[in-house]
Length: 406
Ligand code: HGY
Ligand code: MN
Ligand code: MN
Image (tube, rainbow, N blue to C red; front, side, top):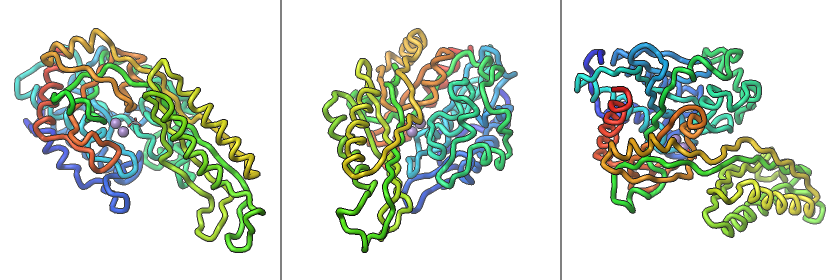
């Protein structure tokens, strides 16, 4: 493998981006697609890849690719995402990208010459932190999400993906299923920080993924009558904040009654949002997940019933919209077992966290590697991975890429 011989550890590479997109108000990082911070990360990744002699391309859906050898077909692809949730940790996404660069450095130092093209991919907007739909880049690439719907998605300022992507130099008219790029991928392997404490309990640094449980996002819009906080008697109110609050309680009650269910309200936005103003509208987003054979939509239907009853009681209306849904994803069993054997019988873990790998798994043989997270916490600044485990992850990823592309 060529390049200027640059060889850096994943830990050193993480250090290079440690200051990008730090969110002083929330703590952690806020790196959303097509913002300045994410643009800086795209620049950084392109520079790091070119310094390694990789050919950098941006596909029609604004995903970034760094190719070793001619692009595809039957390429071995690794990578992850660089965007974050609001106030997210340093590892969710970036760890998969820096580990891929470090693994390429290790392979080059070993004088490895791949017999299949190798690539690193950085998918756009995996968290859906700006436009609300997770895995936006990989869903557009695979046609899992229609370009027309994606381009009309609006961020918190009301700007559409189309306008924002155009302003960032992309061609919205080109967004959509990309047969050529998808056709190049032979195998996809994503390394990711573990979002939980499975590896802590197993006292192991690295695990192989088995699959991802079903999960979706629903938007509940409660509407009532905006009014003055000081002149409106309680019996005269139609305050959408009341059914919204009831819904939050219903989410906890309903999910607590279903084994293994996870349901969350992390985002609740009143309009207009004044201290002395009775809201006219309150939007509440529900994130619901449930391992099969449980049914996520059944859980959501129960919560919806409570929300509708609460709205009616307050003389309000509620509109419920499914914003995204991903069924259960199982990673390729042969690939999973091959990676287990390669990594000294590494443990196999399921996860409740969504990943681009779940989207790709419906189209190409896909696997995941997880790196131990001592805190088990993710989507928060306390997310962490030990430098030694990170180095182990890079070495294991290099071993996997060598086996798959050798
Ligand atoms: O929400 C998730 O599970 C992932 O981090 N996008
Ligand atoms: Mn995440
Ligand atoms: Mn992630």
